[in-house]
Length: 414
Image (tube, rainbow, N blue to C red; front, side, top):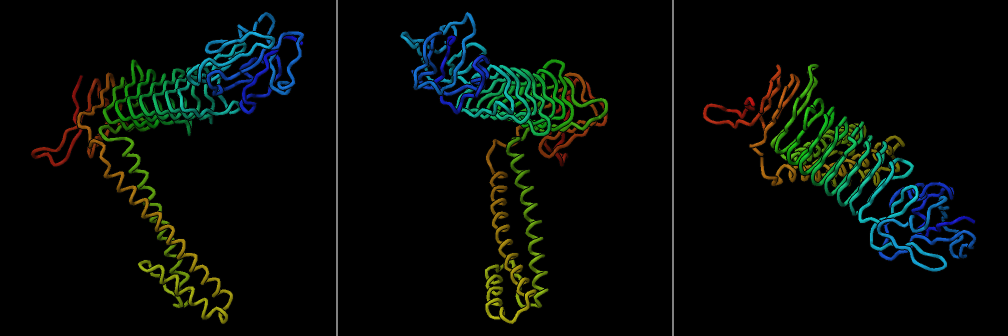
C-alpha cells in the first residue's frame, strides 16, 4: 500500500472522492476545527491502517510528496509510528491539490458552485475562485471574492470586495454592512451601509448606498436605479440612447425602501380586505338577510351566522347551509387580513417616523464628463429630468426660500 493520509475530520464535511483525486476534491470547502484537533494520520507504505480508521476517507500522497509537505500553515505533524496532523489553532481547514492548512478565516481555494454548496460562517471569507449562479455566502465578517460573481448572493456583516466583478442577473445581490468594492457591475443589486466604489461601469443595476457611490476612472453609470445618501461621483451617466437612469440622493436608502415596501403591502392588503368584504356581502344577499356583514362588529356577524345554523340548520337546504359556511369563512378571512393590515400599518408608521438624521442637504451628483438625457435625479421633493446633455456638471439641492415655493435641483459646472 502507498503512503496514505487518513482523514479524521467529521465525515459529513468530507466529499467522497477517489484516493488519487486532489485534496481539494475531498475537502471542497473549509471545515471548522479547534486548536489541537486531529485532522488526519499518516500511514507509511507497507504499514496497515489501524482498525479504528479503516472506514475513514483516505488520500494517497502523490509520488515524491511527504507528509510534512502536506501539513501547511497552522498545522503540526507529530512523531511516532503513525504521525498525526493536528491544528495548531482554532480556525478552518482548507485544501489545495496537495496541501492542507488551518487559517483564521474561511478560505476557499477553488470556485464555489451548486455542487460544492454555499457558505455560512461567523467569520470572514476569502474565495480565490468564482461564484456560480444560485450560490449563497453569509458571513459575520468581511467577504472577498477574487473571481467573477455570477448571479450569486453575498450577505456580509462587514465589507465586501468583488475583485472579479459582479454579474447579478435577475436575482444576484451583494449586501454589505460596511463598505463594498466591485470591479464592475452588470445587473443585480448592490447594498452597502457604507461607501460603494466601482472601478469599471455599472449597467442596469439597483443600488442602495448608505454613504457615497463612486464610479472611478472612465467608468459609467447607465440604467437601473441608485439611492445614495451622501451622493454620487461618476464619469458619465446614461447613454446617447437616453436610457432611463434614476438617481436619488440625500435620503436614507434603507428607510426609503422600507417605507416603499410597507406601503405596497398596505395597499395590497387593503385590496384583499375589500375583496373579502365584497364576498361576505354577496353571500349575505344570497341568504336573503338571514345574516348581515358588519365590518365594525365582526364578532356579532360571526355569531349570527352560527346561531342561524344552530336554529334553522335542520330546515335549510344544502345550498343555504353551504352559503352559511361560506359566510362564516369570509368573516374569519376578513379578521385575519384585517389583523395583518393593522400590523403593516404600524410598520409603515414606524419606518416613516424612524430617526435617520433627516435629509442630507449636502448630497451631490458630480459628473466629470457627460450626463445624458434620460437621467432622472431626485433630491427630497425636487426632481430633475435631463432633456439634453450636460457636461462637467454637479447637481445639488436648492431648498425653497423667499419667493420660491418649491425646492429645486441646481446645476454648477466643474
